[in-house]
Amino acid sequence: MRVRFAPSPTGQLHVGNARTALFNWLLARGNGGTFIVRIEDSDAGRSTRDSEASILRDLRWLGLEWDEGPDVGGACGPYRQSERLHLYESYAKELLAADHAYYCFCSMAQLEAERQAAVAAGRPAVYAGTCRRLAKEQALARIAAGERPAIRFRVPDDRDVVFQDVVRGDVRFQIDVIGDPIIVRADGTPAYNFAVVVDDALMDVTHVVRGEDHISNTPRQILMYEALGFTPPVFAHLALVMGPDHGPLSKRHGATSIAEFRAKGYLPEALVNYLALIGWSPRGPAAGRSGGDDVELLPIDELARRFSLERVGQSAGVFDEEKLAWANRHYLKMADPLRIAELAVPHFRQAGLEMNPDRRGLDFLASAMPMVTASVDRLNQIPGRLTSLFQYDAAKAMADLRVQEEMSADGPQRVARALADELAHRPRLDRELFRSVANEVKAQTGQKGKQLFHPIRIALTGLTEGPELDLVVPAIDRGAELPRDAGLPPILGCRERATAFVAALNQRP
RNA sequence: GUCCCCAUCGUCCAGAGGCCCAGGACGUGGCCCUUUCAAGGCCAAAACACGGGUUCGAAUCCCGUUGGGGACGCCA
Image (tube, rainbow, N blue to C red):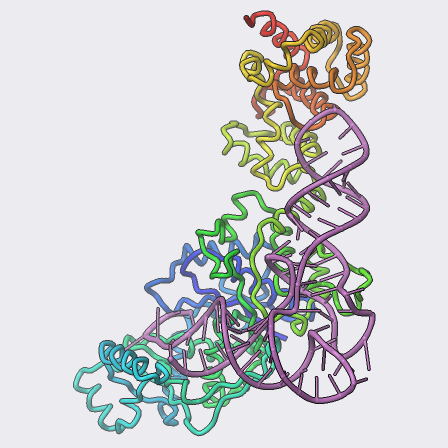
């Protein structure tokens, strides 16, 4: 089995295309097949190397490694259409010689007028066939005279085209709605429908899995396979991914490119897992209705093991970022804290916290991850959840109305003072020490439960909400012990915080 | 306009004639847990687009309607 993903390098890798790539990858990996990446850059004007590089980078980031491709080579290269021009040229000659193709001198304006006339008359908007019957000598003469024709494939007119689509079943196209497609443009470059056929055939692609937007190209491509003497591959057309309004997914729905999702702090394994769930389910008929195997969150290898084209759905799916976020939370919790810490660093910087942590700094950040990964959707929310670590300003905290309100009562004030006193003669806190301190404060003030812990939270973090104190407090004091050159912003210890807070408390009107 | 595809809870899926007065997941609501916000646990509401057939029996098969999507490029 040989499958391919063939993006045209004209922009970012979109979630829809990424899903197509993923399904191809799953199919190949689940069947011991070969996954090929081919760059469809036959439109030189729109294709860029930057775009190619970013698409390849995104595919790698998703973990969709390929066996053959532009940068890794392979037996059927080159893998950029722009480097295969000689091949298209030779096959075009072959088609011309066999009269399966002909020169077309029609002007764009003429074509456009014919198209409009056809639509107005209620006829299919296909090429009228003006140059179809042009004698070859005549065509050659016009070329000799300096005209630059395009080359069209001659679609037979005596039969409909029927093919078996793995996800759609039998698909039949009436032949009269298939116009003769251009296979070589006037400038000599190959057109899409022709280049794919030549490439897929020469690369021995056995299964073409692509978006449904290509389904209407399939009959002409099949005709070309036949004219060229190649055996057509198995086709599978995937329903498209839609936006929440059931329209085409677009920027107005929010992020649409893989790069954007990465930038927002989604993990590749979450994106891959979620994408696999649009139009496919790891639950087979075997799962039954009594629940059974209802697991949707699976590692990519397991997805590949279970994947089958036959089980791919036929209807379009709406992209649901909420469900993506759910998958992301899951993988955030599963992931190695050190990895998450490393991934979070750029987000801290983006949030305005300059840092360049070394090993010790990263270990510290990693130690703080368990208290946030459970309560966050994405990496870019981590800094916000951890502000209490790096930013402590007693005066600023006292300026908060909610804080003022809470601290206006006698009980909370006594808690804050007792806490400061207690901390004054204590070493840096770990979890156990913090508990004993809390107990001591409780004994001295008679405050307990919420009355006890909320003031402590405010005094130590300056905030009225945040991660569990049991976790934050030890983290703060671990951070306070970090050497300056660990590459993190300085962290004020709990003792200093409590003292500063009481001072601010005393100063307020 | 022409052709092609699609149609189960708000969303993603399960369902391949009786197992379904339809099952799971996300989201939503409620409850529990809890020093806060979350997380987590439990419970609940929520769908077979419509109309005709076929059949003893249809979410499942057929036809039509409606609705949605896609394609009709010297873009891919």
